[in-house]
Image (cartoon, rainbow, N blue to C red):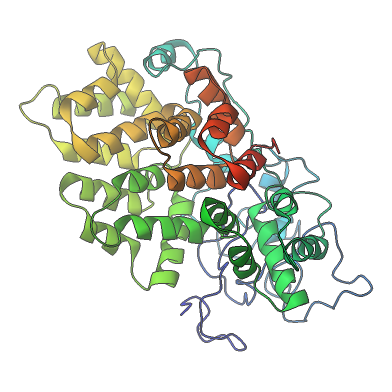
Length: 475
């Protein structure tokens, strides 16, 4: 049952597949809380490239305005903000586009994107994870930390993220639905057409195609894809057709369900998400499984690792980009006193600093720590901690310094040695292709001396391989 649409007339009491999801910007998770008077939460928003009022296209029902919000409750662009609601002027963000997308490719009506309130302090960079976490600070004294993590000092101060999948424009979901229907109709399957359509559309556009597919043919697109494909190729296509919040929620649930726990998945997701994304994932998790993500994490982990996961699950990290150098020195001294200068380790101090400070502030803390001790914070964590807690704390350090490099290492690990961790490979390729997969690919080649493409071609085969290469823009 969908707890965010209960009591709204005309809605069946069931979970709609793309609740609270809007991917008009790279990996944007939409507003995490249900908006008053908004009946369209489960419905994809119209995209440029077709007109709902064109001849032959049914008129949009009066209850579902095109802008996504009822016009009587929400101001139009350039209108005054809501009285006493704390929403800033939309023009504050309209001056800059989203990194990695052209102005024409991303539909952006300021009325549809109100800034979150004080609980979700999103900024311009808040929709681009690589810009939010990568490259703090990349000059003068930070060279030491770059060398400790094999990051070249030539990295620009404000790098742009490089997605490999961007929203196509113009976009006609009905035409795409017809192409997919033709590819799966009758004997045999035209896998090439399926790959070329689904790997060249954004996640939101794929959801719109599925919506039109069911409208035109009365069949579920995901069910048809499952019946026409198999194996890892089928798993990859289903992942592409899943809204990102729901996809992350399922990955987390599967990691802690049953016997044993896949801590690597918990670390990969919880240590890399922004506050906004964590809160939307939590709501999607509850909508699907009827339990709280925090409760399930606490029930399946233990000790200091459980405390770390609980802190990260709160989604309450500072997102202030101002760096307080004096506070950074104070935190560095606290970490030193809690670790190397005492017998045993006070894990709570590391937990408090690494889970509550902004990523920009943490970069300054790590610099100060190196000035105080002469060695890197990563070396100190390796000496003071062990097991899953060590891996999680080191993951936070890596994400602060170079997020694409962190994921490049994860991709390398998924394919090296005998066998392939296909689930990890699929998860990273699907979730990062609209954010910074181009940067990840560059870091992969820089660190390992071989291209990501060559590793995929050597480790995968068939249509599964072609679809992965399609997400890289190479098929």
